[in-house]
Image (cartoon, rainbow, N blue to C red; front, side, top):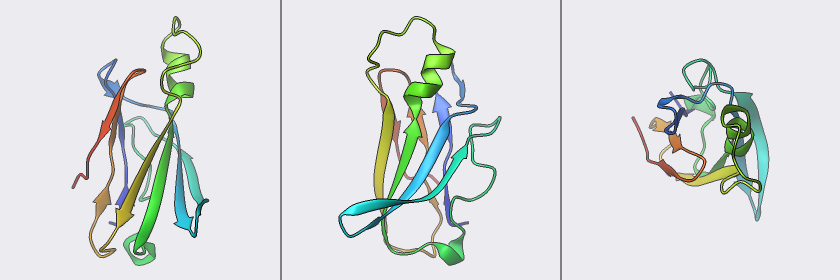
Length: 116
């Protein structure tokens, strides 16, 4: 299954429908964009971010546009927002395994884990 993600809006107890996400791969000292997408009605990408055959050992970053998402969902947030873009940097050591990287997020906090 390669690499997948989903986002839960913990403030509203719902999937983060419409949140923009970017996938980047580290090459040298810089991260390079591989893919950008918008999450579907389940707060998920419509397909794998990277298929198993294309996943490689290395460092990756998922950038979630949480600030833009919450600006639309919550009308009285003070600027500047506490969280804007949430970057999750993670490593892939065994590309034959499935890597699921979910995000649980509110305007003031986030958490992640390696899911199944």
